[in-house]
Image: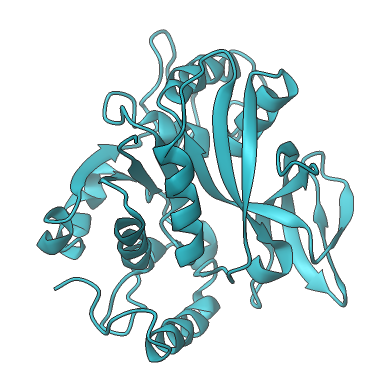
Length: 306
């Protein structure tokens, strides 16, 4: 059985959240941040290591919040996503201030992650079921550089919408064998009556059933994926002429291209748990109430880590 790592993407400032560091908002019963619940659930599921992707200037803040008792239960490591972290021969384009995207964030783990690993957002609550399923997949995953074994926890679109504004989701098409056939980032998604509406990657309007499976960036990979990701990032950088200041290297798009080229197969692990997170400032009160309800149901202790 493989050792497994949980990689937490926590480098973003949260522009839709008003410029604050939403990953550090205190929302738990005893003032915990959202990712503390993910760490708690991951440890319970059997993960051996937690890797935080953050920025150098946030390192001390994270170390204050991540309690010593976490490191007593799992190995803890920090890696840093910086705009200047580019392959040899590339420099930051003039005027570029926007991060390079989730694919670039995961590249920060090169050299630090050598075991099968799951990837999550720091500001999303995924539920216990998701961590058990992804851990069990990774613990038994067999490396295959020719056709990478990938897994993804799929959520029901209706369970991932915000009451306070539009969201971005990886909209999935899943075949009868629970394999991911296609994934595309859709933007500006919001509920309208019995459906959700938004725009696809080309900017065209789309209407989505509320039952549509979507990705919340809870992925599972074997370590070989990082080498492939680096190759794809170099290709991406070589093809952004004319869009140097805004182009993003997105994890779902990388996975989608690998599937299309038959260089990866992705197993979709379904979760019916309700997602919640702090996409907007107005979401915080709902998140606080939700964690209180989970505590009152006995799903979590009053204090996660002592």
